[in-house]
Every structure is written in C-alpha cells, then in structure tokens.
Image (cartoon, rainbow, N blue to C red):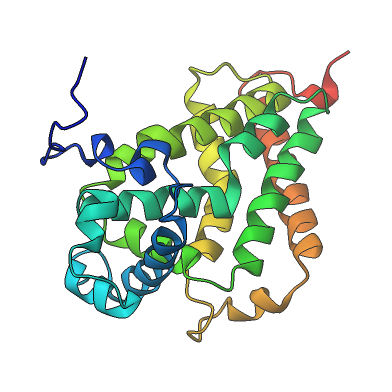
Length: 241
C-alpha cells in the first residue's frame, strides 16, 4: 500500500500526479473552479502562441494564480497541455458520441452523414480556443501529439473506417479503404485547420449553413465511395441484396 504521505512523483508521467490528468478532465474537488480557470486561460494562450512559446509563468499570470499552480494541479506544463488536448477532443467530437453513432443500427450511409455533420457543426460553431489549439497542434506538433493520436484520434478513426467499410464492402485491410477514409475526411480537416479569419479562397464556405455543407460533402463522398468500391470489385451497401 502506498503511504498517503509519499511525495508525488516528478517525471515524464504527470498522469500519476494530478486528478485533472488522471481523469482527463478538471478535478471535482474544492479546487475545481481554479482548475477550470487555469484550463480556460491556458487554452487561449496555447492557441495563440503555440506549445513551444507558452510558459507556465505566462499561464499563471493570465489566470492570476500562484506561480506554482500549474505544477500543483497538473504536475507540469505538459500535464496541463495534455488535459487541454483531451478537452479539445471532447469539445469537438467526443469518443462516446462517435462510438454511439458507429454502434447504432442506422444504415452506414446515415452513420457517415452523422459523423460528417457532427464534425462540421463543431468546426463551424466553435467560438473558443479549442479549434485553434488543435489546428496549431496539427501544424506544429508537440511531443504529446503521439499520445493523443493513440488515445483519442485512433479510436475515432477506427469507427469512421468501420462505417466506410460497412458502406462499401471493403475489407479493413484493403488499401482502397484507407485512401477512402482520407478522401472523406480531407475536406472536413481542411475546414477545421484553416483560420476562418484569414482571407482564403474557401473562406466564404464558413458562411454556408452547416446542413448544406454536410449534405454536399455526404453526397459527394457516397458517390465516390460507391465508385471506388465497384472499381475494386466490392459490393457497396446500397447495391447489396
């Protein structure tokens, strides 16, 4: 049994130090308000400056807390950043939501629409730091990206892959399936990564209705997926039976 007086470990595994890190969310203890405030201020700073240029000192100053608050509540700056990345995933599209769609009895084409529409809605509706932080992380990866990819992104990718496999009849191991997942998600990821405030050729798309965008992307994706499946000799779901 570990003594309650044993000092917290300091090292590469901040998850063993802080309740906020162990659960991937703010602690529900008496310090919850402080933790949430630090997360909010840190999210804004990391989204603006990036991982490399955001210090614990700057975060504490922005949050008006003791200079040791980041280490106290999160174990380290990396521990705080990990919590932020996990919060981004929950805010944009939670794994529970994705799995609920994937495990539903809806037709695969409907599942694909729900996934596309859900991600587009999160991208279009985001008024906070979450999308900007994730875009920065993808364009300039931190050392924590691989962990987030394994724990949060990969499970969502697998759900989308399985939905497309169900829709097209492609086996999970087929190279066409992996390319198809990229083809479906590429346009959505482009909208997620680009800063809508910066003039670009596709900036007007951010003023389009989410449902219109989702229907367009879904229609385009379905037609392409069916064509690729037929070309490769597989039977799309719409053609089965």
